[in-house]
Length: 100
Image 1 (tube, rainbow, N blue to C red):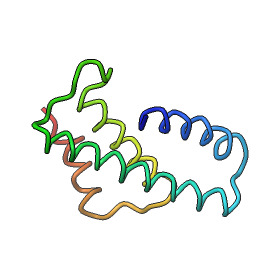
Image 2: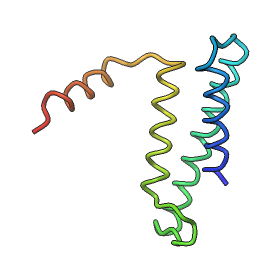
Image 3: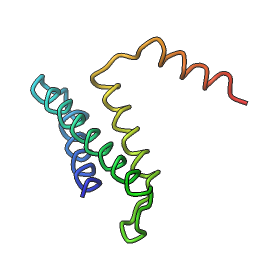
């Protein structure tokens, strides 16, 4: 269900933010929906870990899929609504330039 809401969000996002310049209300709603999706995703991850870290194959996704989707949402939030802290910038630059 969470992945379904994520797909709907991404479709709406494409229409409301990328096809035309968004107004303030749309941007505010985008921020709130992003925050809710991230919070819900983290709660699902927490419950999975609390249940022993196992996901039934019938669910059609792995824990890594969920974690990647949350990370992507966090990147979207940063892109549209945030600023990057110095420590995060340093972490990214270290990862990029100190890689083997």
